[in-house]
Length: 502
Ligand SMILES: [Zn+2]
Image (cartoon, rainbow, N blue to C red):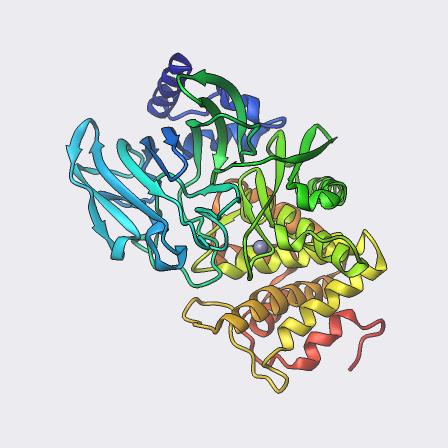
């Protein structure tokens, strides 16, 4: 395995130096499903991360090696690694960078942003387009309590949910490294896109649900084994260690949809598999190909507030949401499966900053949820329509409505959920009704194609809407639905009326 890793670094270094698209090298190619021009063209823009670590039942201790080309357009004097596990909302989890180096030179890791980041000074300024290599030796302790909505957490008798389990290069935007505190429901996936190879030593057991593809499992001395995981185009690599699992899988258009349920949630496996497979097939046909060979669905205790959490090549669904005894409960499972699968397009393929523009992926994902459910049944469509309208109106029966953007909006948790997930989804239902299915779906497909593997901004989306739907339609939409200008509760009912009202 070492030789493969070394080869990967050499291939990357050579192609970075030459500045030309490289063929996608093994071992990552094994994890990709029919990579196309976008994958080859974007291959060199992602960072390259090797992780070698041990999960000892309490903490992940290991070493991270990162090669990255400066794509910020700015000459940099430092790098910042994101260490969000130190935020108090992780309920006792921690991420400590013990030692670090840049270009082979030891540097002192400087804790910044109240522990949410670690700064590594560069010996020489890093020009735009130049590459840099850094390493970090780290210790990541898991929460024994709630974690962050079940992430970075091992509850008693529950699996260990490794998420953000190695220090990752933070996002750069607006002239600085972004390590601001997370609001209560924000996805903590704020790092650069990376091709990751992880060698993780874990206690005997398994198999193990992972976001990438497990390419090797080796026996280790003592009651341990070592997984080799490859995960190309990664925004966040999740590994779940636990079990026993009740598994169910299906191949849809060359992609393995694999469900990992607990014995207590075994009744939900077939519905989760079937709903997820249907969503993958429909989104791929509409928005462009799903990039990976696998999509893993893992049942874990996430706790109140999060029905599911998306991650690269994997989503988590809360064990408490997996009852399927009644039609309503089955509908809720379908809704989560559709929502988290849709994130493979809006979050994973088209990235965004989940803190400063949460609505960019979440609102579109929740509209896509509605679109997927309406293809399942009328009852599910009605359920989702009522859900998003109720969320949107909650607390605003008389108006006015806040702007979803810019991020100067500091909402209550209730308003955040209602406006981003509810009103934002209704907004796209209104736009679809205005321009028609053909133009709306073409707009989404070209968005997914143009932004594939990028980190998109609200300005990019606004420009795309103007280009594809026309300035008049796009500007009217933006003012009313994104900025909330003149938006009334009546507008929120309108997209779902059988006949338009005046
Ligand atoms: Zn979501």
